[in-house]
Amino acid sequence: MLSVLSNRTYRHLFTAQLIALVGTGLATVALGLLAYDLAGPRAGSVLGTALAIKMTAYVAVAPAIGAVADRIPRRALMVGADLIRAAVALTLPFVDRVWQVYALIFMLQAASAAFTPTFQAVIPEVLPEERDYTRALSASRLAYDLESLFSPALAAALLTFTSYNWLFLGTVGGFTASAALVVSALLPRPVPAPRRNGGVYAKATAGSRRFFTTPHLRALLFLNLAVAAASATVIVNTVVYVRSHLGRASGDVALALGAYGAGSMVVALLLPRILDRVADRTVMLRGALLLTPAFGALGGITAAGAGGWRWPALLAAWAVFGAACSMVLTPTGRLIRRSAPPEERTAAFAAQFSLSHACWLLTYPLAGWLGAAAGLQAAVVALGVIASAAAVVAARLWPSGVTDEQPHVHTDLAPDHPHLAGAAEVSGGWSHRHGPAQGALHPAVAEPAR
Image (cartoon, rainbow, N blue to C red; front, side, top):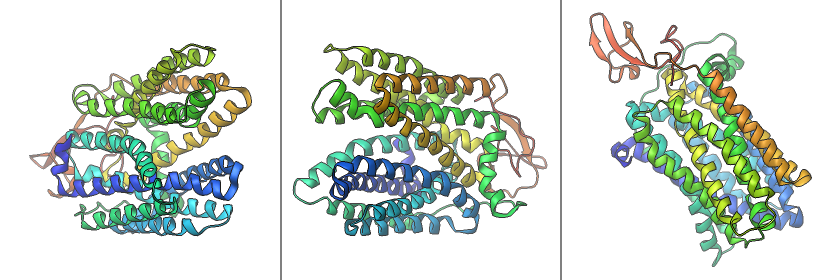
């Protein structure tokens, strides 16, 4: 997996992503402490509202960025987003009103909604070989999981000798370093985006329309929903399970979340070799279907009134949740890469970013409100039904048995066109094969089986 780091551009971009993630993790811890200072016992409602604002920004802003991304140089877009995030983090220690927190969180997450899809769309061009790109996806998955474990520990260490306001300065440093690394990276020249009728609205909805009209991307919508149901259960209710249901110490909350991250990391490490031999469809659908027995086991743990076995069982369930979610999330970039030509990938990744977070916007409050109002068992049943139904629908929407990679010849592209990486020269053009990239370059490529 680490072999892809030999590519200088990818190495700089990956390091930028990693540093920015750590900065975001520090800001998350500091934000919780800031909310408590401002709202006291109401800190939970403040953070819940901030999370809803975060998801709303992701859902609303990402498609808009996809609509104008072709007019803004990608380096300028990513660096600008990093600098906006750094500026917002710099002002957070000085707020003294809850509404100010909400406004700044929206700005922070809107900038993230600009950075992340653009970053995701650049990586397939930096690493055109699918084998390398798969390893980059696994590395990104590992980065997210390691950040979720490392950032809280780093924050705890820093808080032993400084106030939480200094954590925001760590966030500023992270985003500033990320911007510097993006500036130092040699990004590939983007392929000009095709002209569209309908103006900004047509561009903003182009990626979403691709999802709703392409069978395997429609299936991905439901896979996103299954993952959102599982991750909401873990993120929202871990503290309730550990502290209230099992009566364990606060430190065990971190252990439980660590089990979820460990399951995800193990799968991310194994998937590059697996995906060399096994179709994406098989891995992703099996991951989604694995959530059904995981929710069943969690229901049994929830129903049990006592027993020392419940704690290791919860850790095992959380690890399975993490593994199943990673089986779905890690190959997602491969699917989108095959489904959109280079000039339309930013819009496609922006649509995935927006639509997947729309699923979380639904499941996060459901996990919290239903668990609080009707109990954990009701939340487990409801989210388990959602995950199971979504997995079944995804399996039905994603056709199997169709030829995955379609051989075809391009006769009107320049030899140095990015899409022709790895293509063979033939009489009259360039020949290669891949899954569908419907758009200006491939008006008639068939649907994939993967």
